[in-house]
Image (cartoon, rainbow, N blue to C red):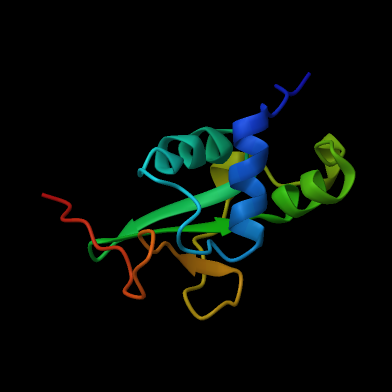
Length: 108
């Protein structure tokens, strides 16, 4: 049985679907929530070239539409998830509240 998504996780999942609008979260705690959602196969988190980004997966889209995970046979295993395509409109670079620049973090 899949673990249920809690209220905060559902809010962050909806935020990702909405395009990660600025000004929603006061802190960067949404990042740890995105990690939990990635562990459930609902988003993909990327940390490449010093940028942190999140992409809604098809399972995440299904969860938002139906309030439940897709049937087990209809989704790929988490270990085989493809890397997000940065040119995809579903690939969102996260912005800090109130800023129009992409959020950059050093990976050092």
